[in-house]
Image 1: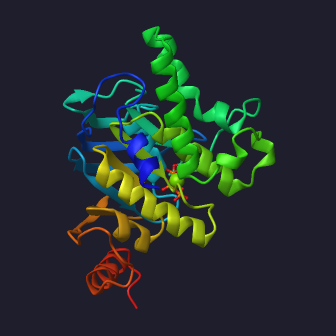
Image 2: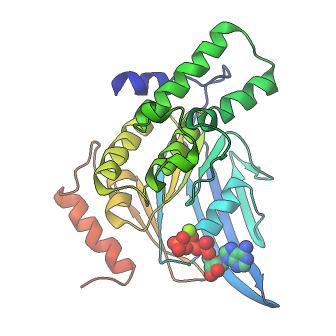
Length: 276
Ligand SMILES: Nc1ncnc2c1ncn2[C@@H]1O[C@H](COP(=O)(O)OP(=O)(O)OP(=O)(O)O)[C@@H](O)[C@H]1O
Ligand SMILES: [Mg+2]
């Protein structure tokens, strides 16, 4: 696994070395039109992600977490307020901000390897890089990403031949291979069995520590948020408002039964209205 991380932590196909992105969400409100009426989904949400920081977003189902991620990804514009990346307004999707959605959308006609290769191939076209050294580096990164998610053996399989959890792992590999400045994850481990989930959580934490990208993770899982994030932002029911920001300076690697995490878990559950 160390070798895998070393390969993935080298700058990607294009030569630039990126630092983690800074994200500023300022006074964002968002509404959808639903059967002629306005559905308020986000209400005056403000928070930042510092370069290289790992921030987790926690909140009840349907409160607006995925909507917020779509704004950060540049897929929608907020009804009110601003979302900036490194000081500039986010105007659309950018390869430096990679999103892994709740439901992985793989190209059914491409193999696993073909799906993971999409980013590197797009870069090759954009920068017209066709030399052998460049190509070898790209292939090494694809191999490393597949190994990281435990799918080397399935590199030539097609999406319909995978389980839901395997498809989710392909989506994660497809994101990591691109050397993101910001990794946006929408419940990336939701469909994984608990053993794979624990392994992938550990790998993500290590990969993030070694690299420099920033992470914005949406999860339903309080333990997962505390195991991974520097800061946990807790949202209310829809329309989502920030109800708490919980800082977590426990050193990595973290352990679920660390008394500090257990205490923080109680605090976060209380913020979610779930204290018993
Ligand atoms: N395109 C859309 N048009 C109308 N309403 C939408 C649209 N997308 C989302 N919504 C509504 O916005 C609200 C928030 O949805 P969102 O997917 O952001 O929630 P979520 O917090 O990610 O929930 P979950 O934890 O279940 O994934 C929901 O009530 C949903 O019905
Ligand atoms: Mg969601």
